[in-house]
Structures are given as structure tokens and as C-alpha cells.
Length: 343
Length: 256
Image 1 (tube, one colour):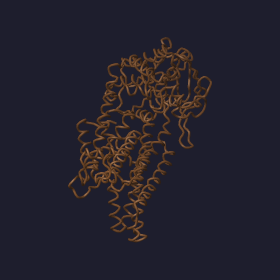
Image 2: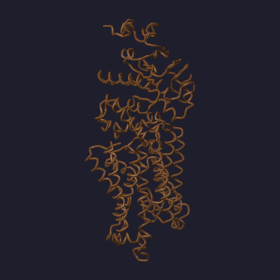
Image 3: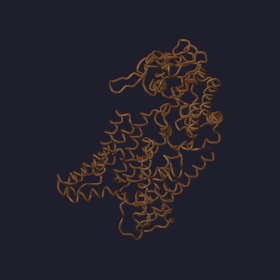
Image 4: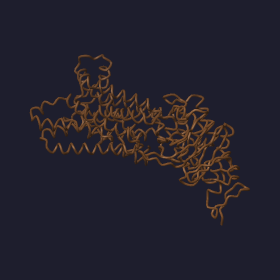
């Protein structure tokens, strides 16, 4: 058993190295290539006032930090949702949190273009998008929480979450039918996801929320490990399943809601990364899975962000397209190689 | 000491309550082995779940050393009672060792770290259940008998005064049945644990148990195997033209 533990430790170390590498490569590449050693000099604080300094500190560093925290946070909420629902298809958005956010943003775009006309529509600020998105997420979260307090059946909760998703998506479709072409286009662009517009004060909020989520996952890791044996066994081992359930809902909503508010609905990472990690480090121990999933989610989003704006390519690809484009083949290849998923 | 008085078990849904078995009363002390017998649907599993505080009781009282069991915190309850259920819905990523170490949950800190004492207990139990060579196998690769030994091992690792088991020998061949029953017996005798299990292996139960609880048509009968047989309770369990009770040998026999 000690042999096995050290193998998991080794896996964590490799993931950590990949994580650091992905971060530096992301800082280094972009429309202008900044060599590794120059990136390190800037990070050490030895190269102030150079053009590299401004590109890195004002633009790339906040974006890279956003990518790693949002990627890590989404992957973490996917992990705890999969453990909680004991369902490999669960992810951060199964509860309808991002659909709520989408509805909020759709109401903002479509509503203002219909009611206030094109001029008001042009003036929609980034802050109001963030507020609309958060309000939508919070609304859905409130309803889900109320349902969870009444309904003890976990699978029932999952289905109800999915139904909220369909319901809000339907509302968005109907709203879009009456909207202007500009509003529709702006909404569609929002759904592509974007890490570029995040400024330092927003980054502070993201880091705070993801930090709370990460610590929450570590705090819950003992209960999550117990839940791997099913609810009855978990309860017989003194785990307060009801309390754990509410905490899991809060953490997921925080992680999914915050990342959607600041970067749009970034899909795929939350669903795929936990599987990726369990295939690489086959364990059910959340004390190992939590850091591993966080680092892998962060690395994957950093990698996707790097690929979405390679040097020499003029336009930036939508991040939501790149995550699935890169992630799906990796996961398919791993599952075919190992012949099954591990849950 | 576990004292159950006038217990009614069953289910509540909304305002509707459905009683499964009624007027269950018994007292068990350390080293006792209670076999719960009865036909399918007679309420054996419901009783075990009620005792383990997994579902609420409808009426009556369950107390440990004179204090109501429900009044203890969930952590203390989990230090008093462990359970082996018939559900097998746990994750296939777990190994036998992963399951065993979860048994230390009620005893270790918030992070679930194992100390030397925990490790010694695990080592001892792995030896006792004879799973040294298979302990790092994933549960999906274990046979029913091996898995059952792991689950009983997990309950032993939990180091509770009471171990509850729901049909522990289901789906097992005679060899593994014998192993499981012997494991229960030695655990009760050597470690002074109280064991309560439900079973359809009535003849084996009559041989092994110090006490029997017979659930039949909503009624409950408690006593030593000999007492129950003397009272003629055993004969009520099955239609006598099909399964007869041999009072002399204290065994059921199928009539051909």
C-alpha cells in the first residue's frame, strides 16, 4: 500500500510540473512570442518597464491566472458533482447553474434591445453582464437548494437540475426569436466564452471564489470519500450526508456561477477533467483527487487558451470551441486505451 | 447493553405510515449473537436499518446503556454501531483496502489521516479475514465471498460494540458461508462484540446464535433457540406439510 501511495504522489508531481509548464508556455506565447528566460526575468521582477513587462503584467498574467483558476475551479466542481451524484455524466452545469446565467445575460441583451432600443443596447457594460449572469445563477441555485432541502432523492435532484436547464434554454430560445440581430450576435459571442476581458479586480474575485471552493473540497474530502460507498454506508460511518449535500451545492454554485459570470459558460472541462485524472491516477481518495483535478483543469484551460491564439494567427478562436476540440480526443483516446472509465 | 422496547418499524411517506413489524422487544449484552429470521418481507432489513438509525423508528425505544440511541451524535453512533448492508452501489474505483480504511472514519480527524494505531488495526483485521493477497484489488475484481469478507472487515475496523449485518451469507457457497459464520462467532467471542444479523440460513443460525428474533406476520418472538423451540414458535414459520421443525435436533427439515 505504501508503494501505491508513492505512485499517486509521483502522479501528483508530474501533474504539478505540467501545470507550471502550461502556465509559463501560456505567458510566453501569443501574438508576440516572449522567450522563457525573459518571462522568468519579468516574474522575478528584474525587467520592469520593458515592452514584455507591460504585455505580461497588464494582459497575459491576468489572463493566465484566470485560465488556471477557472479551469481548476470548473474541474473541481465537476469532480464533486460526479462523486455526489455517483454519475459519470454529472458536471458543474447539470444543476442548471450556467443555464440560469445564460438566461440572465439573454434577458439583459434581448430585453434591452427590445425595450430600450439599439443605443441603450450598445452601452451595456461588462459589469452589468457579470451582474445579470450572477443573478441568473443565484436564482437557479436558490430554487435547487429549496428542492434539495425537500427532496432527499439524489437522482431526482439530478433530473430536476437537468429540467431547469432545458426550461431556461427554452426561455432563451423564445426570447431570441423576438430579439434584434445585433443582440443575438452578442449573446452568441458571450456563449463562446472568453478569458480576455478579465481585469485585475475581477481576477481577485475569481481567485477568492475558487480558493473558497478548493478549500471546501479539501474540507469535504473525508465525507466525499465516504460517499464513494453509497449514502447508507456513509451515514453509518457518521458522515452527515444532509449537511454535506448542501455544502456541495454551495461550492458547485460558487465555482460554476463565478466562472460563468466572468468568462461565459465554459463547457467540457468540468465533465472531462475528473475522468482524465481518474484514468491517470486511479484512486477514489479526494485528498489526492482535489489537487490533481484542480491542476489538470487549470493546465487544460491554459493549454486551450494558448492554442486559441497561436503566434502568427491573426484571430483568436473561441475558448469554448477549443476546449472540446483538444479535450475530447484526449479523453476518447484514454478511455479506448484503458477500455473503461473508472468511477 | 442494547435494549429495544416495543419497537415498531416501518416507513413514513407524507402523512401515511406503513408498519412492517410491531412490538419488538429484546435486550442484548456483550458477546451475544442475535439471528433475525423470518420470511421475505417480514421486516428483517427494516429492523436492522432502524437499529442503525438509517431510517426513523415509528414507535418504541432503542437505548444503549439506558440512554436513547438517537440522543447520541452521529459520530458517537458510528462508534457504537457498524453495519454491513446488502447494497453494492459503491464505486468500482475503490480497492479492498480503500473500503477497510473508511472504517476508521468515525475515529480519525477531519482529514481522515491514519495513525499508527489505525494502521495496526487494519493490519490485524486484514489478517483475520484472510485477505492479505487480495487487499489491493479493485472491488469489481473480487468474488461475492471475498467482497463480503471485506465488508465485514470494514465493520470490524470501525471497532463498534455492535455489528449489524443484513443477510451476510447471501449468494455465497457453503465454504464461504462457513467462513463468514465462523468469523462472526470468533468476533463475538474473542472481541466481546454484540452481533445482530438477518438470515435465511435458519438451521445455521440456530446452531450459531445465542438468541433468535423471529419475525412473522407483524409479530416478533425473542429468546434463545431452545426457548423458542420449546414454546413451539418455530413451527409457525412455515406450513408444516412443507417444512417441519425437528424439536429434538433443533433443525428445520423439508418434507418430501
